[in-house]
Image (cartoon, rainbow, N blue to C red; front, side):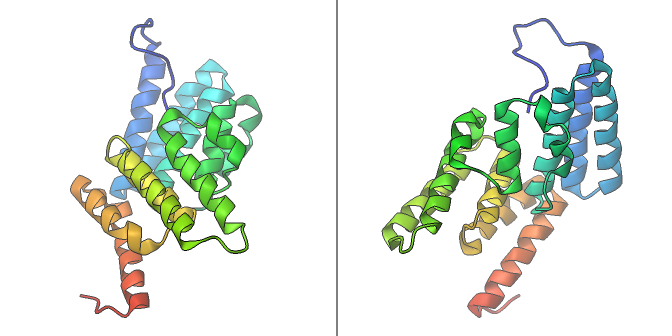
Length: 212
């Protein structure tokens, strides 16, 4: 989530650039499994953004932290956002509900462009699960749509976040964990790698496969 606008606009104040850098470092440290360094960087970002007096910018930092947690399959919720939600945009509120596993059909149009296709598949899946007898063809189509949306994400972080969200919304682990492992391993991101490896162990145990 960007804190400021397009490249053709005037450069942001140095403390905003520093906050953006701290957020990126915090996410990187979290993915690498360094919780202490991650917490320090995120705290620094929030302190810098507090200089603006804008709760919406602080909320974006909180959402960035929550997204990194979800990418590591940590689904405890983005509670820190709730206290700031009234001062945020509909897009940020929709994104927070997406991360929290609380997406509503009306949220899809307000999601950031990068997550709209993914959110659409999730909304369809939620609706199908609410039906008495969805057909296998309908379920298969929605599952495929979600996987395609995850694959279409740009960059390894966005792809891993999408896979984690698919798991949160009920996509079968067998469709997800191999991709989760390969993407996390390629980046050297210890936290999501260990989480997806554990998912793989559980999936193999359920299916009766030999675990090596």
